[in-house]
Length: 130
Image (cartoon, rainbow, N blue to C red):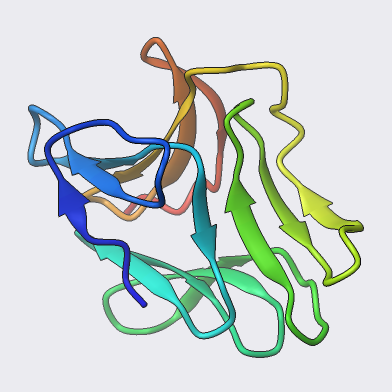
C-alpha cells in the first residue's frame, strides 16, 4: 500500500505535500509493512517482503538499504522522530537513532534523498539524492 498524500498533518499513516513540489513530508506515525512503498521524484522508499528497507532510484537500482531480513518486519516512523524496523515480537532490528525529536518529519526529496528533519534541520539522511 502506498501512503497517499494529504494536505493536513496527521498522526495517521499519511503523507503531505509541502509548499515546495521538490519534496514530500511524511508525518508520524507512518508504517510500511512488507511489500509497501512510497515514491516521490527520483526515489522510492520500500519495505521488501524479505524485511529489507531500501531506497531505489527511478531505474529501480537500489541506492541504500538497511540490510535487515526476516518475516513480517515492519518499518515505523515514530512520533519521537525515529525511523525503526521491528520484528513481530517488538524487537528493534534497525534504527535511525533519531528518537527524542517529537515533531520531526520524514522528507523525500525530488532528487531521491530521504531525510529526517526537525525545523528544517536534517537529523539523518540516506544520502541517495542524485
